[in-house]
Length: 424
Image 1 (tube, rainbow, N blue to C red):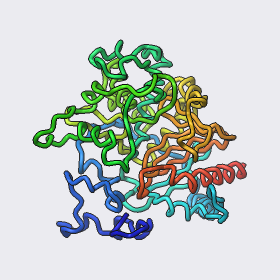
Image 2: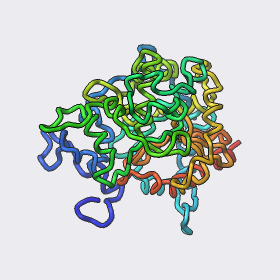
Image 3: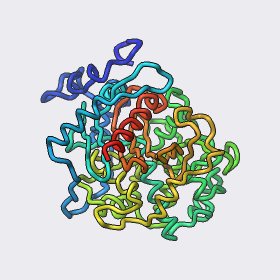
Image 4: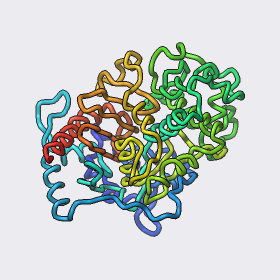
């Protein structure tokens, strides 16, 4: 919340350009956002920081290579403008509400920083707000998990990674960690029985101890905890049985990052560059934060350009092909689209309903067969195979939980999908 108000500032009032964050040479002291002061990720400073993570934390590059980017396809300018006007005016009814909302109103309600929609491979809508410009990069939070999971699924399908192997068979130094007896597939689908709490509103949650271990800054005097992501994973205790149920826990993603790095002999950043960013003709390199030992944050550290995330979504929609190039086997996407075991998904995500989770992707099992990469504060790549639509939204919603955003997002996506299908 901002300035002690019961409600946060609106998207328009909290726009970082309106707030004046980091403007001037030098900026006034009350407009500085600095590290190591962790409030740089509190609202409303968050709305500036999501586009500037590389100024707070060290990163590794996910290189796009030296070839020219493969341009995206756009309609003629007058048709593009007309489509924007039509989409902005679309109406829908949010979940659990009676009053309708327009598409454009939903963008502001969800503190959108960037939005891109492709239909049949052509960009039909693109807008930027707040801190994000077309040349900029935005933190994608837990959408990073879906990239890690995609790389793992590629390796499984290609035979490089055995999904039935136990973690300790690949990473012997995992020792007595609860991860040791989990299978690779259980890590990929987050059905491990490991102890880890990820309630961002709880200052004693494990997420904060994990963050302290991962911090690349010098550890404070007297610190006796683990140093780095992988050292933390070695001391994780058990909670429940492996394979029983889906539990959304970021440490699975970093365990998976360790596994695919060990098997491939490459960092997750190099893998993402070689298997995704370069072959898909990205126009910008992406960047991934690292811990104090240089290990990339496989569970949430990537910042990337809006259009390149659209390319990634289109690659998924096209079953592993893009620009006439087979980037990875179609079976990879087929496996993800099929989803995980729905009986294990539970009821902790009511806005999604009877969904599932597999290879670090969320599968909705709705009438359109949609699936998505998702990250806190409103990040998503939403793929709708029936509508042949890819939608990417980058945002800086005041609170982390996407369950607060879904009621005005998921019906909006459906409205756009139906509109695009009506254009045939």
